[in-house]
Image (cartoon, rainbow, N blue to C red):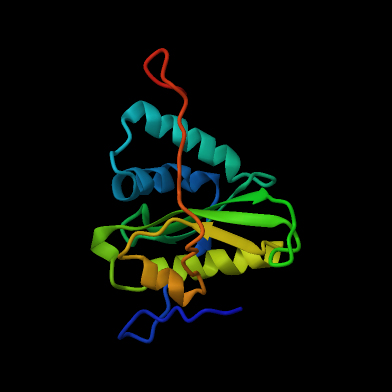
Length: 171
C-alpha cells in the first residue's frame, strides 16, 4: 500500500531514509526530548543509544525511517520494534510491529515529516511481512495514524507493570 506523503501546501515530498546504527543517538535524543514524559539523563541516553544501535543492526528487531535535518542531526523519525506473535486470521504471518517512537523536531513540524517517516516505515514493514501493527497515540497524533488505517480498539486498555526497585532502579 502506498500512502500520500506530500508536504501540505507545497506539493513536495520529504525524503525519509532507512535508519542505521549510526542514527541511534539522534533517535534516542528525539525520543527523550519529545516523546517521554521525563527526559533521560546522560547515563540513560548512552544505555538507550547503545541498545538501539545494536537493535538497528541487520538481524536486529528495530526498524526506523528518518528525515535528515538540513543543519545536521535528524528532523524526524519513526521507530518500530518487530516481534513474533501467535498467528491469527487477521495477522496470519505472526509478525507484529509496535510503533515505538514518532517524533519531529519542533522547528521542522507542519511539513509532513512525521507522515513521510511513518509512511516509509509502514511500507518497509509490509515488505518484511508484518501483518499486525500496534501503537500508543496521543490525542493530537491520532488523526495522523487514522490516515494510515489505525483504529481504536475499545477492548484494549494499556496496563503496565514495572519491577520493584531494589537498588535505585533496574537497568
